[in-house]
Image (cartoon, rainbow, N blue to C red; front, side, top):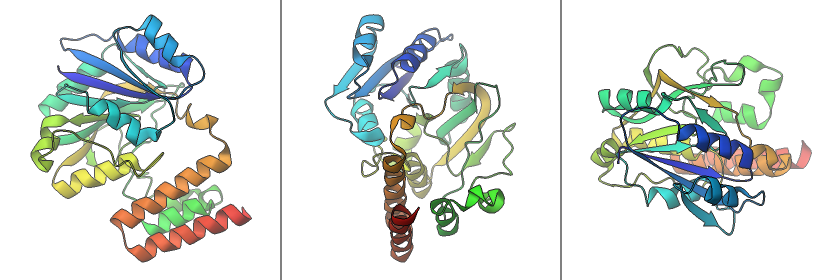
Length: 277
């Protein structure tokens, strides 16, 4: 198997249907399998997949296990040389998968690969991020970029050129291709599993950080592109709950990768944010 596509879905039946329909229209000389992990949707998503896409390997959860844990369920079943974590609200073009695989095989040193993401207006989504630092995450927690947009430009990699392929710190988990052989070479592990302590957010940043720690690289390439409807599942989460998930994941990331005092500062700030903002 050349490619294993893993989609974690929650209550986005229509977007999921469109995603799968375009996936199975992919052109190119390669073999791929598709997994859908449903996190206890209530909109008929599982019935849709079973009825209209019987070739999909469907995993149905009785509860919402979050992004990392659900992806890991499918990753453990994959057989592809490459594993693509693909959000349900994405739409590949007929040549997206083939062009991405061609680039990946021409650049075997790339452990993780992201392609060009575009929005509904055809504009490039600026997805590249530098690894989080205390200052920029404090600014985000305090919502100061709303008042001073340029204050987190370094973190947002505002100077990045999306017209050229380049190694980057991290990319969005919406289209996240993992080279199994490259990962196994640097880690000794066959399965590139995500850290399940994160429910939503920071799991892909954490994975990229781990790749660099082990000696691998993360790359962005404009060789292929994919339409991203951006966060259709997350939009269903109440704002307060979403903020709680985001803050908790940020603190967990800093506990794992940065100084303990930095994690404590962020934890205190998020508590104050929830109390007063």
